[in-house]
Length: 489
Image (cartoon, rainbow, N blue to C red; front, side, top):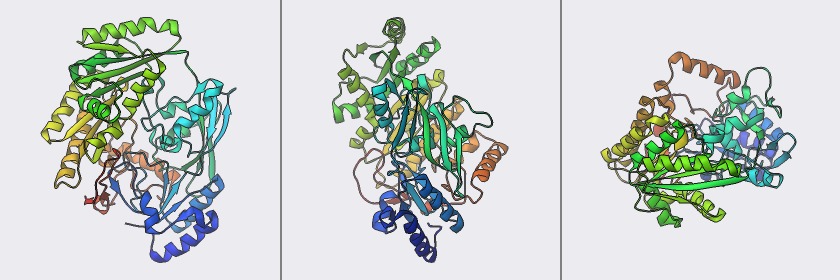
């Protein structure tokens, strides 16, 4: 479904080429089809894909689109899992792969200034020689862009100690749909007036197009202590998480994997996780070496009281890196089990983890679906990976029903429907579980002020009259599995 007529398409194509050059504008179906999806299960064709190299070019694209009432969909690396970069009304997909420069590492102000196409991990690599790093580290850290992280307010394995993206963004340069540029925040720790930086971070590309970002950098820690705690019971593992946090201990990372996730990782990568365990916790402390021994021992005591069968510690940096590669590799590893996955992103209060994880397993059994549970457990942020094959009749319906039940379960436990993946297409109708019509009206009013014509990433976050039957379900999702053919919703 496209908002661009054939007549307008020719004119807009000509105008875009004037702004960007022919080499930076795609319009043929065999070219733009590559950009019809992100890591979500649905996809839709854009009319154009453009590759700006400067803020000025983004301004001209926005002004052109505004005059023609054509949708604009900002796009990073396409690793988002809620459909945020899917152009469900066609229009112009604006890829930031060529705006990928680290403009400044400002050691005195402990910040970095970057363009939106910079890969997350490259910020820490650039800051490392100065003794600094960028804290938010999603599982897709090696490939995801900072612009996409801004859009979804991404978290990561260090979220329990350092927070999510919004806690590390100091300033933004934003192009409004009119083509105007606004500067929000800056290198100072606080700016007077409304927190518009906070409004834009996590807005999923619906308020403005971010073209420059000022990020907080943290000083690298002196030492790390990493352990894997092995359990015969998923419930014992999740209870250990709740008990650690209740004692006031603050690990830098506290991650959980269940048996299916462990088996997938080991069969794919052989990183040394025990394949017969029902669950493992990957726990890390960091800071001053002398200050870590006491909390490390307290965590061990708590784990043993919750029937941990074994506690392993990483004795070398290589062992530590292997363990983290295994945890971050889960999403790719499950592609060996099924050709597609539906990744959920619910959040629950930490004391509810044992109960909720047990019920997630039951939901998988109810629908005869394989679910691998991984979690930023210290945050209560669950990522059940529902595996399926869209070529099987009725499979997609089961998957979406199971996903909805999992999110409803999280809300009923006092949690919410997303911790870091965003609302996108997937969860639009679920916002009403959490917010009144007045609440949603206030949010839409903010959207209307920034984007009065409604051209920025339309159909995302809020319910619209866009029919999801116009979207296709991909046979290849975030898991990177094989398969062919499309299933229509």
